[in-house]
Image (cartoon, rainbow, N blue to C red; front, side, top):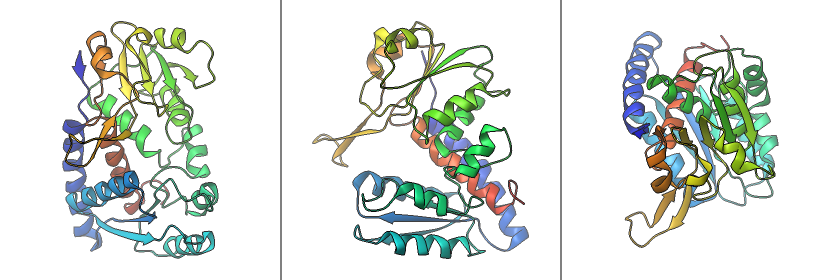
Length: 293
């Protein structure tokens, strides 16, 4: 078993981003600028946004955090999104999910200018990805592809089983792994909570990408020896043994699956760190007008 070490790969790529950001500052006179909007005070969202802002500063980006009370109206939030869309000094805009129930996340996602949609959730970016056109790839799938690329994992002809069909991870991941590219060129099975023979499907996987959002969902009896296992899960539980007061668990039963896998991502220290790298690379590409000119 070998670790797909998100910490090692992300630090290496962030160093490369920092060099490019410094060059951009020297030629344009400004830093790439990411704006994040955070509604409410959800613990997980607070942690994720703080990490994104911290990493922006680390690579030489400008970052701005706009906070709203949980009772902010949908109209007020959409007006702020429109305002940021029109700000030429902003390269990327993310609205941290989940949002309060009275705000439609689809409406907010579609309101973001697709040219600043560095999370890669806008239908235009997803549609362009589907057609293998230049676009902002959703940050988590992008990070996973960068990790596979960094470790030179040969995916050609492999059977990739994706567990989970969200628009954020599972569905785009299935498209990327099937594309005529490297990484890619897999035969892909997209499975989910309603798949009746999920265990049998997983056992066929040369590559398993677990993104179903359930702690330790993928167990050792679902993984064939030598499989590559990528754990997207970030399941928070309160803990009295950690400084933060919570502990993260993946969707994979790491302790029992790791010994039979060829490669595996840890949680934490795996895909989560690569998601931030995907976001940073999208923001830099936006600043440099590499996607939409």
